[in-house]
Image: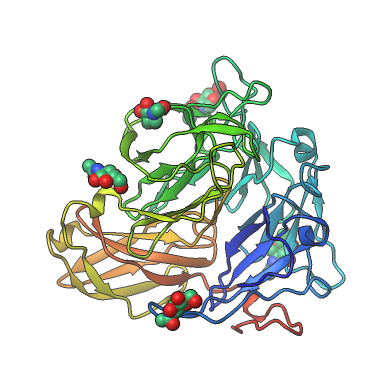
Length: 454
Ligand SMILES: *[C@@H]1O[C@H](CO)[C@@H](O)[C@H](O)[C@H]1NC(C)=O
Ligand SMILES: *[C@@H]1O[C@H](CO)[C@@H](O)[C@H](O)[C@H]1NC(C)=O
Ligand SMILES: *[C@@H]1O[C@H](CO)[C@@H](O)[C@H](O)[C@H]1NC(C)=O
Ligand SMILES: *[C@@H]1O[C@H](CO)[C@@H](O)[C@H](O)[C@H]1NC(C)=O
Ligand SMILES: *[C@@H]1O[C@H](CO)[C@@H](O)[C@H](O)[C@H]1NC(C)=O
């Protein structure tokens, strides 16, 4: 595939248009930092796709150049792009903007708290909260923003770091990874986020803990959980059973070229359903050491695809090997369940039936169903991640699923639907939830771009 400008350290999400296009924004350097690139997936199992990236910096670009921005889906279906620097290790770009840019409009909002915490806040962690507000974590701080004006609604307490250094942080170059705790129908619990790993400015002592908070709970405070070892630049992946895998990373240094060493291949499992202090268990090792510039994503067959590493640390090559990790739930010799999904396009609050369910171990009364949002993985930031366990009613060989109620619980987008027979997940099928309220499917109307329509 061919991009016209350099995607090095760009941000990405999967759009809620009917084609499930990927948007990629920012990069390195100069014109590339303004890049807006769109890719329409085609092809299918066994059939190569032929589409390529669509990009024309003269016709479509960001309002500000950004190296290391985060992209996120707003509840109203527009795309939020936040932060970064104007170039590699250059001045901050302490503001955000919204795509598509309205005609004649400017959507840039300046953010003094990003200016103040530069250079420790790149690729900030962002998610929509059940109130409709936006949560953002950057360096060692976090706050809640209004989703329309982006003014601060609430400042949260600083994130704890290490007992010997409270200045440790969680975003690039101190780089941890964030996940959202699964949201279960009827979605009355406040949403909790967990951020694992990180490092400290100065001595670069890598953090050995995860911190979690329910930003909208009364008197929200951070809970600290110890990991079995230090970890910088982890990748976290949401699995179909509501757990998270933690892989990759290093035990010394900070993120960046040549700045970290001492990889640890041990994979961890974080189970949010267990009590604090008992959530983390140790899994088998991954094969390849992966530090700076690594990724991990969930495959449709519930395995995990692990890629990347370009650390420029002596002794560690630029990796072109990829690996698949088989989590314990597929390692027990149990046959995965199967199902049919007649309707791939769900409205908020609608009810949808899956049928022809085949279970090879358990019983339909104990079936679980999860929706894992489409993501883009880079630099420990899993943009778009969300896990939903919707309300279900099952009997015989079918289940009726009630879609999440609104864009605050689940912003518009594509999800992998898994059914779980005891511990064992099915392969997924893709379902879109919440349509395309910002009509991104008609955007952009420019030569050289092929928007899929509504
Ligand atoms: C798909 O493309 C790859 C890389 O060019 C090639 O090796 C492979 O044979 C192609 N597969 C099919 C089914 O055409
Ligand atoms: C969504 O909200 C943002 C922020 O207020 C705004 O810039 C954008 O135009 C809105 N999108 C739609 C489709 O209303
Ligand atoms: C929150 O803090 C206030 C003031 O300290 C206290 O009165 C209240 O009980 C706390 N609420 C919870 C849920 O802890
Ligand atoms: C790697 O990490 C695991 C789990 O975090 C830990 O138990 C183990 O001691 C670490 N190994 C090394 C060589 O540091
Ligand atoms: C652990 O992973 C290695 C490398 O993939 C593999 O050879 C080994 O069989 C695995 N061990 C277990 C207990 O699954």
